[in-house]
Structures are given as structure tokens and as C-alpha cells.
Picture 1 (spheres, helix red, strand yellow):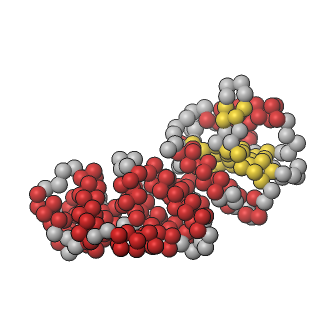
Picture 2 (cartoon, one colour):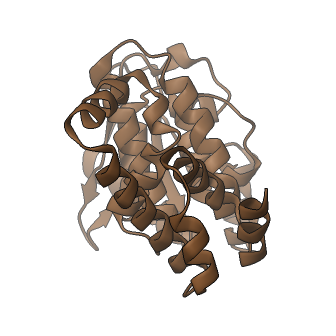
Picture 3 (tube, helix red, strand yellow):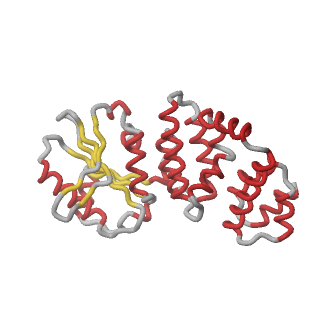
Length: 281
């Protein structure tokens, strides 16, 4: 899944997230419709636009950038001007440029671009500098965090999600979380990501507790243990290459609860020596 598509889904799910990022009252999100709009000429498409239902509210143009792009501001400004000419809105506007980090922002800015930034016509946000906040902020931070830090944040997001009483909303957030994890752990398949996190964090939510219990009742313990062992061995092999016979023998001797604990612990392993330390405990 493309990163800009993930962001579109996150903004669509958390309607007040943009205003939280801008440090504005979340109530300001009332009356806005979030959409993606294509403008003609070169077929520019915004990552997202917040369109108000009143003339006294701003239009917010949103663009997310995860790769270096020297002409980023020129293209963003061109998209905005073409939109304004094409749709001729009555409302005033503000642009929000979201960068994964500061290093991705163009180094050389023209006087015109600097003026737009100085006048707050263009607001810049750096995802790796955001303070902890809502579930929505947690999801977008998850996209830019190093892999080693992602499991901890994913667990925090799941803990917040577990407090939501609307089952449909909770399931939607869990699905978004999985999409972010698939994007983060690109070397693993969606099935492996889902299985890996269902072993620990996602299985702790009430949404999945019933499914977990049904699986225990329907499946035999022996079959579950074999599946867990195969999953752990596959994940370790993907991270550290072929495992030695000694490692495979030690892992095969683990009980089901130990295998589940290892499946969670291996997310923090930086080298094969971490596995040795865990097995020796």
C-alpha cells in the first residue's frame, strides 16, 4: 500500500487529526468534508483537502512527502493555484506540508516560498518531531519510526484502541494499524504481520478475545503449537537468515506459551545474539 493512501485513510478515519496536528481545537473539524480532488492541466491530485461547509472557514490543502523532492513546493503551489482557478472557492485557504522528517524538505527556498511559509500560508509538520497524542497521531508516527521502535508504539495504539466501545470503529482502527505495520515491515507478508501481532498486542483487545477463545476450542493444542513454532522460525529466518540446528532444536522444545513470548520478544532483537540471550534465560 502506498504511504499517501495510508495517510488518506487515517485522515478519513480521524476527522479531527489535521486540526490536532495544527494545534487547533478539534472542534474546528466540525463542518469539514475530507476528500481527494484531482485538478486538470497536468492531472495533479492532492493527497487530501479539507473542504468547509461555511464561507468563514479555511480550506486546507494537505500534501504528504516521504521522499526528497527539490521541486516539492513549486508543484504544491501549482496544484493549489490550478484548484483555485478551476473551482473558484469563496473561502480563504491554508496549505499543510507534512514531511517524514526535516531532511526531506527542500533546502533551497525562493523568496516567494519563504514568504508563504513566514505568513503561515504554508504550515510545515515533521512527523518524527510530533509529541505523543491520539490514536491518529500514533498511527502516523508508526509509519516513520524505525522498525525496532514500532512494536512498542503499536502496543500503545492497541491499548488506546481497546478503550473504544464501538466494535466497528475499533475493527477499522485495527485494520489501519495492520496496514501501517505492513508498510513498515516490508520484508514480511501481511499474513506474517497479522500473525506476529495477533500473538501479542492485537490479541489483547476484546475484539479479538472471542476469536482467540474459539480458536482454542476448535483447534487442538498440538496443531496450534506446530503452527506457532513454524511462524517463529520463519520470522527469525527472515530477520537473521538460516538458523543453526542448535537454534531450531531449542525453539522446537519450547512450550506454546514460550513460543508466544518469543514471537513478541523477537520484534526487539537486533542480532542473533539477542536470540541466544533469550533462549538462555
